Length: 54
Image 1 (cartoon, rainbow, N blue to C red):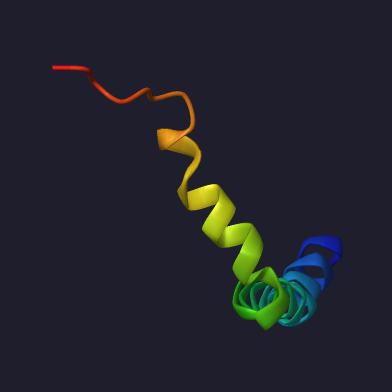
Image 2: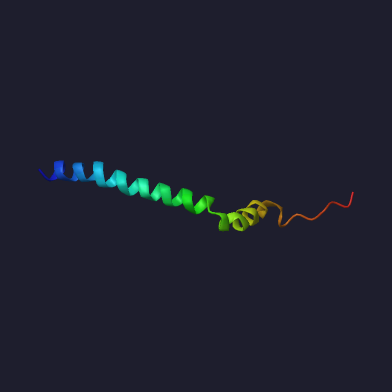
């Protein structure tokens, strides 16, 4: 009986929890105030480059 109870909880509450985590992650990534952070993160590969003097 314990297995069935845990399985039911994982099927219903686990799905709800993971859905909320997904919605939170999408909201956090696409909020307007995160634009500057994403722009800064996109430039990380170019920070240590120096221009070539060829």
